[in-house]
Length: 66
Length: 310
Image (cartoon, rainbow over all chains, first blue to last red; front, side):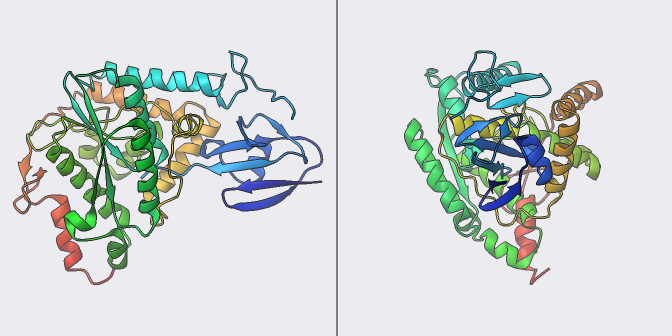
């Protein structure tokens, strides 16, 4: 089963066998939780939440100030 | 839609886990915590005095937009204070133009006067042109921006210049100065950087230095503040970027690292009893405050004139 993840402007498909913690997905994508904000089905959530293939996950990369 | 599993102590869905505290926060409780931290930093360090005219250095990004909103929210009842914003257009393609639009929206929403100026108008140069001559655009941009912020804030009658440096920025600056062994710049960090008395120098204050960057993003987003989230096209491959990555990696492994770096700095500065007060001279070319004969901005402008390409 595939999960569609929106990372910034890019969209990636990730293979999921069962529900997975967002944190684990971040690790797979090589992203640091300090550097991102996650939206699950349009709502901001912590990285401790679980996602399934029916969910929409958006990962917002925090842009550092100027 | 299914229920989220992580809840704040108040029962609402959590948007943040503060791992160094082991506590979940919802949007409402996080906003309250950020406002508390803002008040604590301004109060404890006496950043605001009666009748202050505070110029907020606005970029249109999440940090400065949150700073402006916090000043409005916390101090709007104080009739003795005057709050206004200043934005500088560095001349970076469409990047800054989009940020200026967001800054205008926010100032309009809050009823705060926004002043605008640009590198082109004041210095006769844009960062796009600087980038054609040198790869060190961030150095030039930083020096010119600090120079103009002080000059314009003073001309507008400001008694304080509030900058949106957050906890991440402060921790990065400390480590960067350690790496460069730059004691002079190291001394200048803190909630009121470089508290030098000079009639041409507007003291800078950093009311957000105890707040994590991620929390400021969440604060701006959950309070529906208009802000620009585009990245500067010239911000690749600078030292700060590497230090940011290093500190974020440490924070992920050892939660609380950023707070401890800043705490360590504050403690060591007190122990070393470094005299922050000193005298400034004035630049022979432009008359702006400097501790050299010629200020850094004039020096870099001169260097640009004599440079064809790096």
